[in-house]
Amino acid sequence: MKTSNRTIASPGSQQGYSIIELMVASVIGLFILSAAITVFFGSRSSQEMSGGMARIQESGRVALDILSNDLRLTGFQGCTNGTKTPDVIATVAPTIDFPVAALWGGEFDGNWTPNIHPDLVSIANLPKAGTDVFYVQHASGRTTMLTASMVNGNGPITLANNPDQLTAGDLVMISNCANADIFRATSVGNMGGGPINVAFAAGAANTRATLNNAYVVSGNQLSDPMRVMRFESNAYFVGDSGRDDSEGNDIFSLFMLDTTSSVVPYVPVELVEGVEDMQVVYGERRPNGQVRYLPAGTPGLDINNVVSIQIGLLLTSIEEVASEEDNRTYLLADVRVGPPDGNEQSRHSGGKRLRAAFNTTIQLRNRRL
Image 1 (spheres, rainbow, N blue to C red):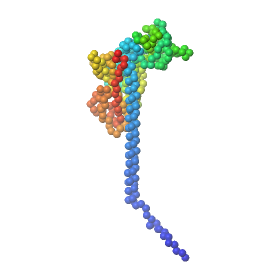
Image 2 (tube, rainbow, N blue to C red):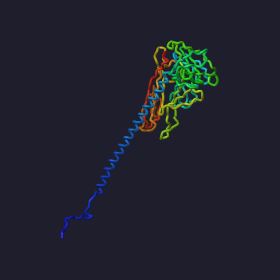
Image 3 (cartoon, rainbow, N blue to C red):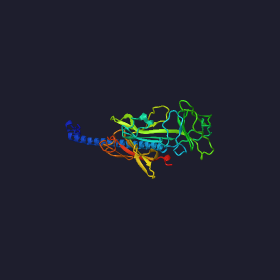
Image 4 (tube, one colour):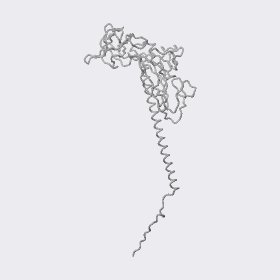
């Protein structure tokens, strides 16, 4: 009989991991998991901060572009030098008195300094306390010319094209180098695909169907240009968007109030979210030619002599994505904006939000003539 050399191990002779080995492996695993979690949340926090700052930068550029483009045109009315006060026949129109009404600035801190502009009563309590408001008027830069002379100021006005996309109800300016009129268009149409007719009938839209000035096509549009363009009248302010962040804090935005509508009260439109503060100082040209910058409402500031404006905006992230409380002080125009517990001229809301200041100086082209 053959014998086998195989040895069959008994259950008691089998070996595995000891308790100590399992505990060491578990601790090592926990360290690795903890490191992975730390890296994950650190990467997520970094991405949130990078994304938040990118949104702030983009919003800041958009806001400054909107404000700069509008302010540069202050008082523009074609080839006149900006000192002519247009004749207005529209029944519902903002206060139009160039150059006095072409630019207005105020500060709101529960009360207005100076007194609120009469066109802005519909937003009397909407601006954020401690911020500035400004109001600007001009014709658009998208001008077109007459193709036929008017007879004794009667309509219609005949245009070669319509770059402003004028429609019935729009407030329209027509001007040459000596005169300017403002009316509300009652119809805009063309003649079988040809020239475009803009009518201004009397009634609810206009006090009469005749302009104060008859505009004649001279044949030389360079020496005697006629211009037809939309009239624009906009106020800008920082106000409550009506929305809250995840912690219940108000979200503020940049708003615009268009005062050219035939329907009152005017309703503001939200432009850019996350604008926490706006400060404005006005560059007044002195008799000696120098320019001094002063806040709105400063005694002795002559708004008619303002030739440039400095604007400062404070943009903030919507949520708290920063690692630390924001205790920094920001310079907006000539105003220092500090943390809530500081003693600066103005204060931001603090918290762990990202913030960035945006500043620019804008030359008023039609005020330098």
